[in-house]
Length: 128
Image (tube, rainbow, N blue to C red):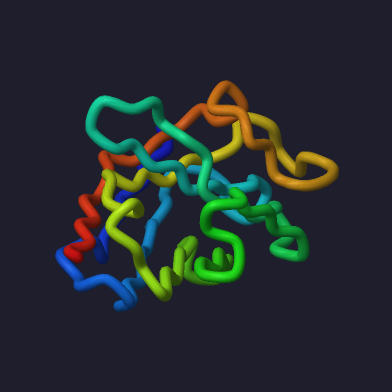
């Protein structure tokens, strides 16, 4: 069974930064793409950023491009989301997710259905 545990959320002022971490266990972490999604109150869960299994391909939602950076450390079985220049509209619960398909070819999928395992989420609140 795969377990994903997020950490690093919190309260920050607009313009500030946070770094989220997601520690994975239970299968060969380095063979699977990983992604971050977020869900604001009353809204659908949306794709934020993804990174390929090898780490050489990343993809971002337009709303975070240039402000957020996704990375991974396969030796530590951890994926990160560095969030800079945070805005109040970034307020949400952030979830990490693991791809259902090993060594997926191409850019990370934007689809929720592509991800089998999910963390419990970490709250990010950006005050204006």
